[in-house]
Length: 90
Image (cartoon, rainbow, N blue to C red; front, side, top):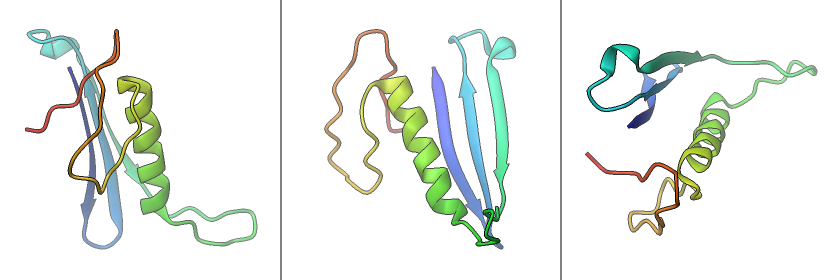
């Protein structure tokens, strides 16, 4: 199984939660919670952490499922790919 979430809390705090493992093998599951903070480019321009986090989430989603991530589309056009995860809404 694999769980991926983008979590936004007030005051510009954004977290990416990721957990991956086998059912029944929870203590050995890979789990991480990464905080996304405001980053400045070389020109001292503030980057948009939300857009960057969504791009990273979409890249990871495509890597794990073999499908493009379409965040605002309710009817998902997702095809099961061999040896890849298949998303389930819980």
